[in-house]
Every structure is written in C-alpha cells, then in structure tokens.
Length: 242
Image (tube, rainbow, N blue to C red; front, top):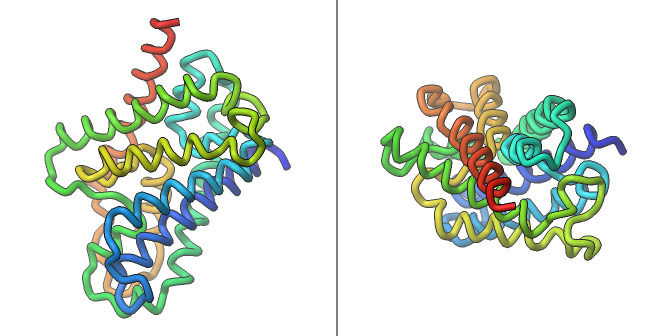
C-alpha cells in the first residue's frame, strides 16, 4: 500500500465512522436516536484510532491537511508530499461521506429537519460569529497539532505506527481528539480538519438528498482556514521552543 492509498483509506474510515455516528444520533428512526454529545465525541475519537491503525504504517496517518501542513512547517514532513497527501485526504473524506449517505438513506428520507441532514456532512457553529468561530477552530487545531508534535516525535512523520506500540500506538491520537471534542467542540463542532469538513460539504451539495437545505458555503471557509492557522501556530511554537 502506498502512502497515497493509505491516506485515502485512513481518511475514508475516519469519515465513515465519524459521519456515521452523527447520522446514527441525529437522523430519525435509527436505533441510537439522540444519545448525546458524549457518544458523538467518543465515536469520533475511536474513528481516529481506526484510521490511524490502518494508515499509520504506510503514510504516518495524517488524515488531515492541517496536520500535513503543520508537520511540514515544523520540518518533520517533506513539503513536496503535502499536495498528494491533501488530495488523498479529500478523496477519502468524500468517499466516506458518500457511503454514510447510502447506508442511512432511508433515515435521511425519514428526517424532516434539513439542518440535521447537513450536520452529517459538515460542521456549523452553535452561535454564528465568524471571529469567535474561527478562533475556536484555531484553538482546537493548535492543540491537536502541538500535542501531536510532542507525543509522536518520531511518528506521524515516518512510515511507522505512532509511539512504537503497534496498533495501540494509535490510542494517544484518539484520546487527544476525544479530549478536544469534549472540552472545545461545543462552539463549532470541532472540525479541526479541512478535509473532514469541506470534502463532505461538497458531497452534500452534489448528492440528491431528499429535501436538503443549502450547504452553508458562507461558513465553509472557517473550518478550512481556522485549522490551517492553528496548525501553523503550533508548528511555529514548537520550533521556537526547540
């Protein structure tokens, strides 16, 4: 498996399981209706674990353009590889959201709330305020990349599983994302990943979803720009402290 394919598969699994839990929680007539934020954040953390376990040995399991950019700024990843990683991450994210829609199509059709349908694909702020919304995304991505740079010093940058614990080496990343979701996710839904948000948002616009609303393009820049800024700040701080 090449790094490009690994990033596609890893990001696909991330969005399949992450978007899947949102669908399972918010759509009508599922067997897991409305269990709460804890279930969503836990499942997203576990989705990261699954994606990292599969992709880690082959690509380092970035699964996130902000991570790839942050690592490149920190000098721990080659800039020449960044475009191919980002392309793979977007492909994986779009495919993952497509399968979520196919799997839950009957429940999409049974759900009247158009914004809940969109929520399976992309994030939206609890209170719409562009300045505070982008600050939230910057902070979340900063924590993600800054901690990754420290607890994985020799991983996520080489073709090895993080921490050197085999598959268990993916657990720290899962716990990190889980913690961010629990502590910082309530303002914007903690996209912290441009591919995770923009890729499925594009699919929301393209798919023939019954009675769907607009894809909220006026907000779409926030979960793209915010995570990249946060990742860059984390990398610059790490370099300053080294």
